[in-house]
Length: 176
Image 1 (cartoon, rainbow, N blue to C red):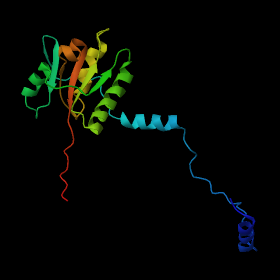
Image 2 (cartoon, rainbow, N blue to C red):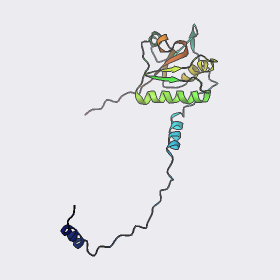
Image 3 (cartoon, rainbow, N blue to C red):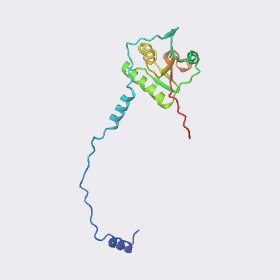
Image 4 (cartoon, rainbow, N blue to C red):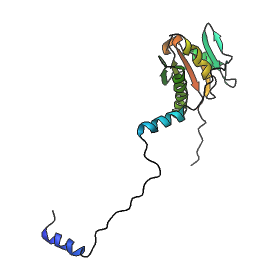
């Protein structure tokens, strides 16, 4: 609490000071965007990778179990995927999505795996009409970051899921 002496001392110290009038306003160049607009723009940027519906890759289908590996990847990796040696850290459920939404979600999943350093992910296609179950592997092989995929083992979804391995960027060795 200020006493009368303190208040008088303050008044004496500020004697002759004028109040400054703030009457200038500098407008920003762009109006502020809503959070929903920012989120939508971010999602669009994340899903810029385009999956072609016309591309027909040479997928190996053994007993209707789809599998694929890039040419520069060891063939043993498919056996490891089939056995369930890789444990998915991210799961994407595409049940009930349209083809366009499924494409966007796939691109986002691969980007999320790359950003988070996740090597293995599971994509739940479901059974349904089989349209997504058939098309998803054909989209995935087009992405340069997908190094292998295989029908998931029973514990990770079986025939209704696909396990993918996503290439991770090389970690730079920093010298201190």
